[in-house]
Length: 212
Image (cartoon, rainbow, N blue to C red):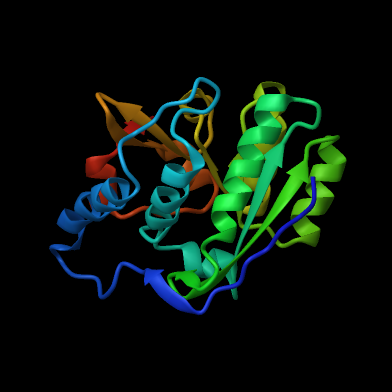
């Protein structure tokens, strides 16, 4: 699957000036994004479709106080998928295609770049993550057997892990998007997020389902 990238100029994904009422706006912003994208549609392999996942995940990242320090000059997302797995390849294509539409947008003033990364071996994945300076991993479905390795590398390199597979959050991925009663559900694995160097706003955590 070919790599794709997108760079950005304007910053709609920015939480603005921090203040004591900012946390009350977090969920409103997330729900507003979801409403603009239409009713929730759930797929068997990966929960919400990419068109709904991507804006929510990008918005959630703005509430990581350490994002700018971790990312440096740009937000680089590596979409890790399993070649030969049809569900993994389809979701990866959908996520990549949706990210491509965010050309002209930024996350906390960071331009967005993304890559699709085949999981072949642990050694190869580690090399690609370093080569591409990945600071956010999106874990596509089909990676059940690879999670331990992905999480070991994410913690060692302080890379934030994200996914649309709720079960992966229970197993250690830091940030996930699921659905409950027809509404988007933010999932945060607090221990994993801290191990990866993230520090999420307390207001976001109040609105999320926190996995300890």
